[in-house]
Length: 311
Image 1 (cartoon, rainbow, N blue to C red):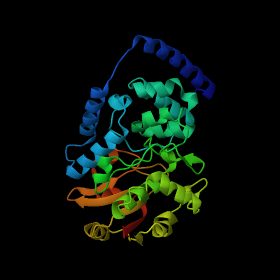
Image 2 (cartoon, one colour; image 1 turned 120 degrees about the vertical axis):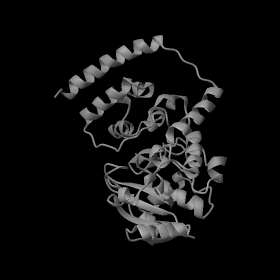
Image 3 (cartoon, rainbow, N blue to C red; image 1 turned 90 degrees about the vertical axis):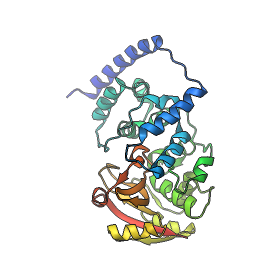
């Protein structure tokens, strides 16, 4: 196995080669191109079986984070893989050969932390957000869009640049804020509180001791914390019938997930409906995984706990 020194030397060589190639490559994209990208991305993200619910929320999410740099990313997001640093570099190098955004990150890899690079190689949707960490100052730059306000269950992303660079514990919301983002989605829907964006919930979580250094958001945020914010949480048994009954009653469900399709360690997602093909999911870390339904059989082995909510 190559040493890390050799890996970095090879990456610097690749960087020089790409810089020369970049000088010869010129492209321009205007406002019309951005609109076309939004439409194209929404269509690309949706599997053929996607229904109206997925279509509307994905379109709104894509428009909220749309960036020209996202136009050539493949949106077949695979299950995440836990990698050591040399493996992260190797995967990044492979991605850089096929994608301009990955190449830009690869060329300046030393500007990013290991968690940032690990997050990107597992989810290339985050490319523009990761690049933005080089200049971001941690401020929150916006609230909900008009499209999100009109959605019954808007898909909010933890790595949205409006709030994703804001600090959360020893990290940032974009990397560690899945819990506050899920609770934000529940609050926005059930309480119609457009001000309760992920950054506001993250602040509440930290101020009230629900963020645990080294492990992230405590499960207590979804029960005690949710109650403090005006919701009525109910811990559920892991049962397809119970879950469907709650959703039939209009009660969204937040699940804490173990390693599998959504995470290598721990993660929160929100379920808001179901049909004959499975459950509708809002994954705050991934548009692609939110664009399809998930069967109970797929989810049950990964769910560690779950709560439904009413007002």
